[in-house]
Amino acid sequence: MKVLIADDHPVLREGLAALIRQTEPGAEVLLAQDAASALQIAAARADLEIVILDLRMPGAGGHELLAALGRARPDLPVMVLSASEDPRDARQALAKGALGYVPKSASRQTLMAAIRLVLNGDVYVPPLLLNEAPAAAAANQPGAARLLTARQVEVLRRLGDGQSNSRIAQDLALSEKTVKSHVTAIFRALNVISRTQAAAAGRAAGLI
Image (cartoon, one colour):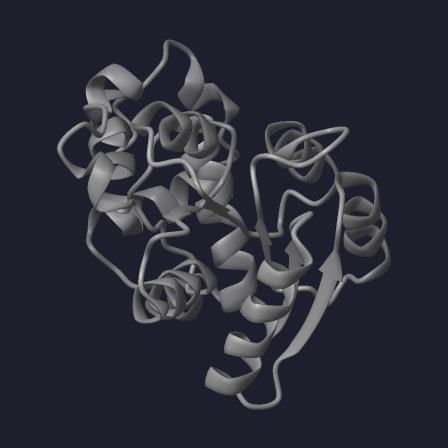
């Protein structure tokens, strides 16, 4: 596991890095104290597997960093770890491309489970949003389906069938990493936060 942690609080950075190294032996953890250094590391390290960032940092904050990472490294999953438990912050982060939102009050077990889920190409939706997640039909913006490539439509159809990333990779002769990238792009294009919502949006658009 190769992880980049972007947070301006050194105690939190080091604590999270220690937790990951303890839980995942052999994990490589890189640290950034601001958005500029996080972007530099992401650009230099093509082997990064996930970015964990705080929304509130000096200078360009987490939301700006989310957008910048989405442009520079659309294949790189990003998860937000934030002190905010405001559902609006969580919705905004997920809408901007984050594949997970974890409050800093969450347990160590919850945090590590969320990291593994995002690494597997899924989305971690915190309990504070489970009762407020937007309906897929509403999230399926007009014309969003046209943003999908033919290959992404094939992946979306298999999501609708409930296939796992590994099964999709096998059926389409792709690597699991490539499938994860397609799933990320599908979520962003359809403005959804789960595989179930993506499938519903695909059906509403006539793609499934």
